Image (cartoon, rainbow, N blue to C red; front, side):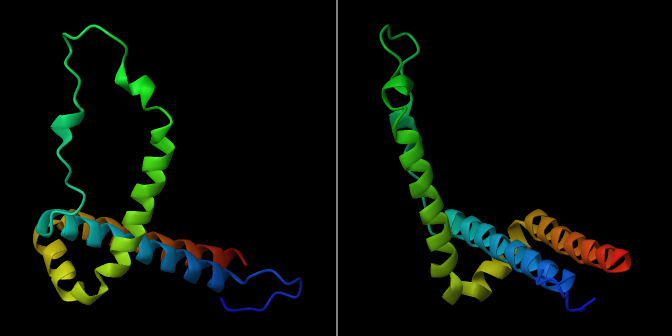
Length: 127
């Protein structure tokens, strides 16, 4: 599985390892986000302040704030990634929280890792 290609392409094992590392990073980021949201109140803004009165006649606020969607999504992604790094000192608490309260999330990322490993095995058989 770790054959070196003569044409300079990445080997199958390198591609699978990079895929598994990416899955592991996003898994950790989701674990950390679930922990921080539930235990630390991370990104729990009062959503009722943004709800418009349905009986009110006038222009829709969603159209006025349409330019903010891109800005808010970038901010959310930055917060998501920053939270993944900031929760590293709480690794034991994050892992135990997810095994106790979000077992489905642990199983989901374990299946994704197993799928990547199976893909690597299948690709090595083709190679």
